Image (cartoon, rainbow, N blue to C red):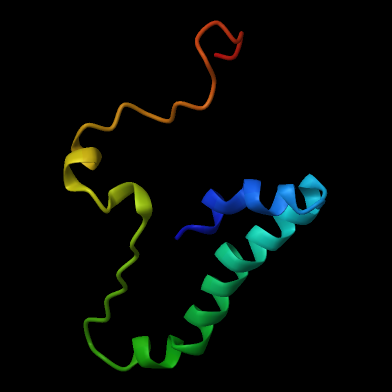
Length: 80
């Protein structure tokens, strides 16, 4: 599960929005960075190294092909 999808769970536990975002950042960004740095030496050994990133947005090829953009703001919100 992507940690971003659990933001409401953190907020329901009497955390401030900043505390919840820091907790999510620590998992999504810092964790990924530490893993990459840990295994960097393994990536440098082969002549043709490759890294595979997976995301929730691309787990369904059908959804990836029909992407219309993020639906963050409702129409008429004044944001362009």
